[in-house]
Figure: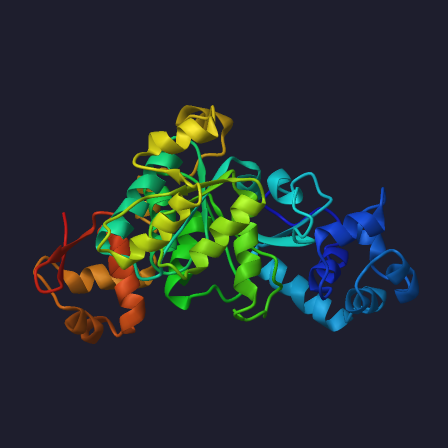
Length: 373
């Protein structure tokens, strides 16, 4: 299930680019016919079938040059497509009326059919919050859940990295095209997710930038794929709370980890708890609510487990290798590492966080870092 949907991908590419189109439109308009049968029909007929005006106009006469470019990108990137009427389309996501008509997928599309838990939180977490996200993700992924998040800096990145550290599966949902992962600081993490047996997905076609309006749409996919959403750290006004609200509206579980009353990043979680979210102090609290029978042994025996950690460790991104070489075993400041590596400071900070969570780097007093082991 790694490759493109069998047959000509261009009808699905046309559906993916149709403005304002979602799975509910497609199912109502296509009926018992394949979704691809809508492409090339007259605009008037498509309007009669309930499609939005702009989508009907595009599907009646899609731009062949645009579709050819999309197809070339798919083939070059080894990416695939999953249409909303395909057997491989995730059933929990399909339950949403406004689910994406088409998903672009890099990596193992099988992950989309597995039991998933969304983990979200602040882009600027405390060190304790990032460690908590990493540890919870590692524990839950190691026991069989697929960890789903948005590839953002902070808690998202820590959750993805934790799942990878446990040789588990993780899904990253982007708010832009897969050709330019956002944020760029986590592009290497996206590659590790694909190499580690997970998947990076989007409803947005190649070339689509990370526009602000894309992220609420991305958040509905994160929660829609998942049995529940766990919020680790979040301020009162946070995109993570949007994901949690969407999860509740979708009839999914909402979990929150409490924190100190003095920590502003705990206030969003406390607000969720007051609204009825499940309080989480350990991974067992999540298992007790979800009642998932999967175990790590089940995943391994099914043949869909990720490569072992030794294999993954040998495939560190080149920038990470450069950073580790620059660190050595004497404490170094971030400024010194920027000078030594030539890496931009925001990227370097994100990389150091991930390496610290994986136990490769230690943080010393004064904000200096040192290589471990």
